[in-house]
Amino acid sequence: MEKLTANSLKKVLWETLNKVKDGSMEAGAADSIATQAREILRTTAIQLKVSSQSKREVPVDVLDFSESK
Image: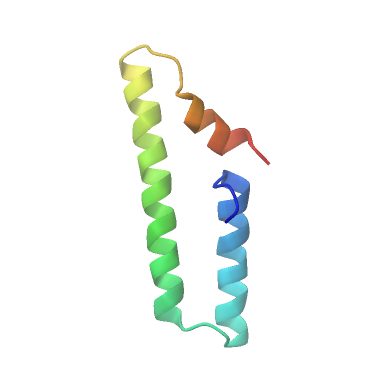
């Protein structure tokens, strides 16, 4: 399994969209993937808010997620 990064997440979402467009994936399955992606992004946003409000450094896993390729 590929490491989860912002780039890999974007890649999966584009692949999912294209599969729905060409008919090789049902919209319901794509919706499940999109829901999980939203949860990942929401969790990351919450981590950023917590670190900002507590005046702590941004967690390393958030930096790895956003900056890794």
